[in-house]
Amino acid sequence: MTENSENSSGNNSPITLVTALGNPGGQYATTRHNIAWQMIEKLSFFQELDWQQKFKGEYASMVIAGRKVYFLAPLTYMNLSGQSLLPMMQFFRIPMEEVLVIHDELELDFGVLSFKQGGGLAGHNGLRSVAEILGTRDFKRMRLGISRPEHPDITSYVLGNFSPGEQAILPTFLEEAAKALEMCLVEGFDIMLRKYRKQNLLLS
Image (cartoon, rainbow, N blue to C red; front, side, top):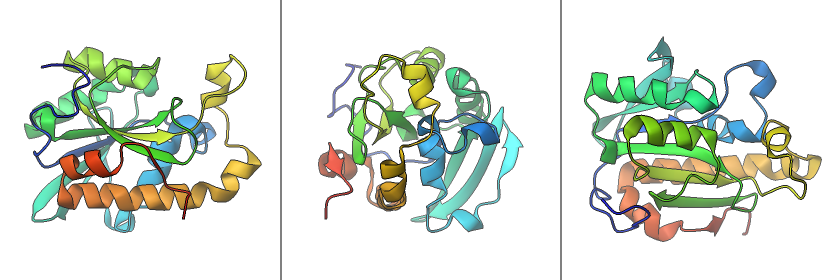
């Protein structure tokens, strides 16, 4: 299958496994690298999810649009995320085309949301782990922009908290992104792929 093809087969498949990448531990909860976890908590049905520990992570499920949708938060630390994702896919027999990986994205400005099929890894350790474990980069992604820092120290940047200015508008970004995810789970990935190529959620 051709990488980075936004018209790859499988786009019309329903999403049945949402994997939000992040790092476990309170010290990482509010960092840029954990924006996917922060966004999941803004889902309208988040309080109804019953999280269980298994597959080296925490997972929950919810019936959405007549089908069961699973949510997974790997607890392996970012660079080993695939070690949590693959066992869950195998246990529930979830094909790759029904998996959506949510992650922070340096190459998008803060506040920008993009759905993407396949593509590069952009130095993201979580994506690298998923690609290595699955044996391909051609998986569905929901990318949450965190902007690239002006300095070269990427590690301290992604493991740091948002700036005061960003924190002031972060709730809006997360809430709008959560709405987009819910829409994706109902309407399908292909529709979101067209609607949210690079959409700034902070613009009215």
